[in-house]
Length: 178
Image (tube, rainbow, N blue to C red; front, top):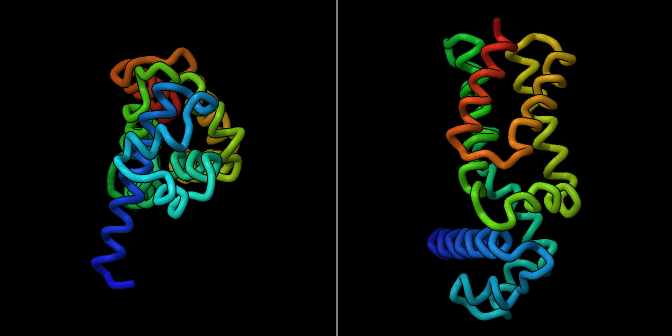
């Protein structure tokens, strides 16, 4: 496949994932069909199935898609010459706040992460491992990193607006980096 064809293929995949994310957040996993996603993406169902073999396969790709590039950017933050508080805040911005902004306030936001953990356990486990790894590098010990992760998870439990989530994360990072 040529480079141009690869770019077109990647762009089409991104359009499908955007359409699927929209549908899942509007209607939920169980009420979204592959037809709904194909219509939202302006493509045929057969073409959709060429890119994703099932609705489960597509949903699994969405969690990773919402975090696309975040882990790499967080790695870069760790090597920057900034305070631990600034590092922790920036990592949280990349891995929690920016992805949250993509899904916040939609009708089925509350079921999104729960469904992700059921359908994409590898992706959600990787997410947890990455946050703990980054936090451990910043805070210096694994137990603090685990507690920070658990606290971080609780900050979005009541489905706050992104602005509120950001303030909560700022408060949490302040407490952990004193």
